[in-house]
Length: 153
Image (tube, rainbow, N blue to C red; front, side, top):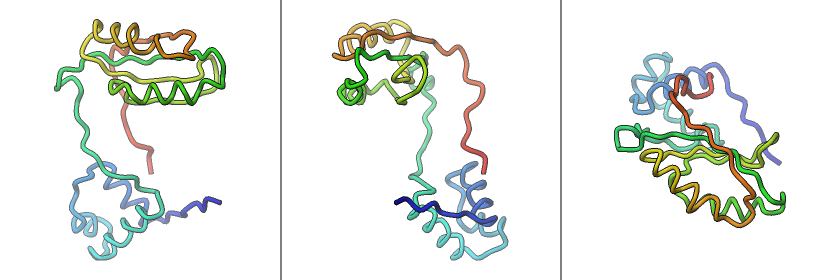
């Protein structure tokens, strides 16, 4: 049984600050929240232990490192029972940065980032469409990302 952690107003303020800047010093968070640094450290540790905070990361702009094409792809399965086999194969493709099991037209919806359209075409033809259990795919190239944010706390 999963117990849902109940966050209070201090937790919300802490989360709001660290979502905006994961590198913000605990003492600065403490000043903003009018509590001690130790209290912030304990709260963040509790939020981490309870699974509210999951890791921390640096976000790399794909375009700055030569990956200029972002696409989304709906994946149709031959049979629903192929899901686990297909997912195992999709996880082996590093250009796939998100993969969701969905309702609706597609069994799986993925986000894929490639160097360019030719690279995308190569991944689709040589890697995706050769996976046993995939009947077909439908691709959408993203022209611009306008909104990218964390859940508002």
